[in-house]
Image (cartoon, rainbow, N blue to C red; front, side, top):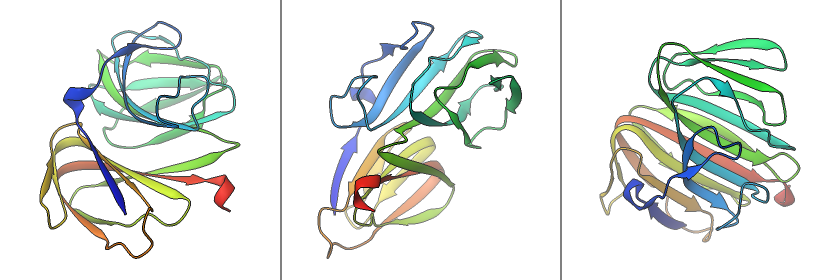
Length: 194
């Protein structure tokens, strides 16, 4: 299994696609992909004001409130309150989506996949998890609160640090991750491997 540690301090914030806010990319595939040609992309966004979300044609999204009072998302005319921290909410990125902040700025965690090429799921872990990507998948673990420690080498991940695991070696050992806080575990499945 190949492991890549991605430190929060190494990220460079960039404007949203629609210019309405700022986001920091955690990881994307292919590496260096732009907002119009990624297969998958994971980011952390600072949302300071209500307004429309960027439209991403052919993309499925999963969004999770990390910090702040939450938001109401109106997706194609249907209102959804996304106010509880660490509860993922899935919606289509090509929907007309309006965001109403519920009392102040928030930080959110975003997972986007081009639905023709890949699918994703987000699991929230608060204690311990074993990571072993299957063929055709990768796993991204991101510390949303607190810290986590990876495997026998005791690699420490702090707030918003991440680790990307890929199935490079079918005989690789599982990696145990001890969580002291909240960890988002994102599993991305490449449709070409089906």
